Length: 223
Ligand code: TIU
Image (cartoon, rainbow, N blue to C red; front, side, top):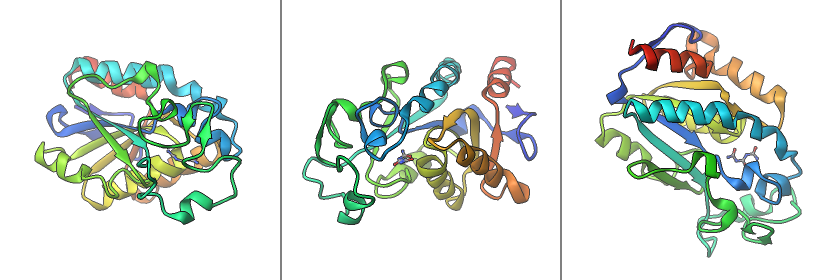
């Protein structure tokens, strides 16, 4: 497959060696009452990417591509949550506190689940991660290596925090990474623009970006 419209230049991958990685499309970030809102953010901005992300996910499933979903999630005893992370910024509710959707950013709580529109199906990988990056303390690299994955196409939230961190971790581990421009969002629109720019600058120092329509066209054409 070849995504001609990708920047800074066309992106080539084989479906068998590629995975779609959707970062933290969780109620905790996208719906009111979760972690994102407790940090003082307007979470409504993030909903806008759900239709395009769902279309990309469905098209990817139809061609039999591997899907990885991540969740930012801590153990109920918070043993994997450093005090520095819990206390940073003096939020209204801290990680582990009881909120309207259960305990904030804790695995198994209603708010920690992936939103219904993008819910994982059987055969897809779901990674709970204690950090911002998907490779820190998760075993994701080993899972991908065992499947011969070399190319990662990213979507999810938020662009400059968990998505960019995960992409940089992946880039350092040797993956060719592409960020789907309309399948990622930030609470700060300017940060999204800046992140897309910095990913593809310097000849793709972190990777590529492309609109999801370009991916859909490549998948449909089987190019
Ligand atoms: N706060 C913010 O923008 N993001 C996070 O805390 N986590 C993710 O990006 N998933």
